[in-house]
Image 1 (cartoon, rainbow, N blue to C red):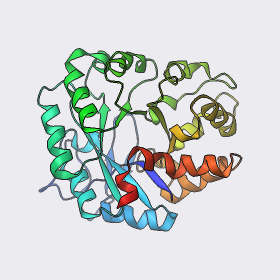
Image 2: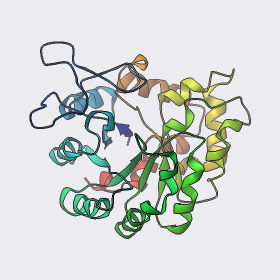
Image 3: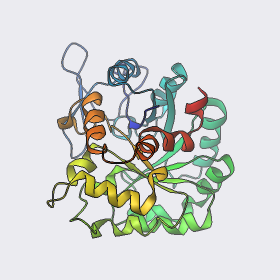
Image 4: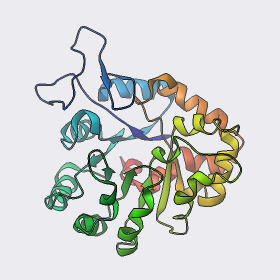
Length: 289
C-alpha cells in the first residue's frame, strides 16, 4: 500500500471556506502563492483523488494548508470526513493558545482527526519548547495523537525539552529539514535532526525537495537515503509528495515516480516501510478505513 503522508487541499469555495490569502477566481487559472514559493494549483479533495488514482496512491494524510487557511481546519477536516476510505486529517493549531488542547480533543472526538501539526508561521522559534505549549503536549499524549513538526533545521533542537517531558508523543519532522542537506557522506547540516534519532518516537518525513537538495553539494539521493536509513531505520521514514507545494517538481505521479526510481536501490522491505507501512503504523486509521 502506498501512502502520501503530506499533501494539501483547498477549494475555490471561499464563501464556505474563507481564505487568509487571495487565489484566482473560478474561470481563470486557479493558483495560490505561498510565502517564498511560486503558485500552487487549485487542489480540491476530489481533484486529489483523481491524481492519486492516476499515480497509484492508495491513501493520504491531508495536512492543513496553513498558508491558505491558517488555523481554520474545516476544509481539511471536511475533506477527510467525506472520503474516509482515502484520507486522514492532520490539523494545525496555535500551540501557544490555551484553548488549543480542548480544540484538539474536540477535533479528535467529533471530527476523527488523526494528527496535529506545529507550523511555526508567525510564531517565534522559541515556541517549539515553550512551557506554554506543554498543555497541548499533555493532551496529545493522553489522546495518542502524533505530532508533525515544520521548522528550520537550526531550531528543531528546541523541541527536545517538550519531547523529554512527554515521551509518549510520536513526532515526525517534516521535509523542511532538508531544503539544504549539506555534503555527503556526513550531511553535517542535518546533525540537529540526527541528534534526536535515539528517541524511538522520532520519525522523518521526506519529500521531493529532499531528493533535489541531495544533489546540491554534489551528492545523490541514494547517498542521502542511505544515511537516513542508517540513522533512523526505514520503519521511521515516510514518503510524501508535498503536493501542490513546489510546483516545479510536477504533479503527484511525477513525484512518486521520481521517488520510486531514486529509492529502488533499497531493499523491498525498506521501500515498503517508507512508501506506506511507516505511515500506517503512525496513523492506523488509514489501514482500517
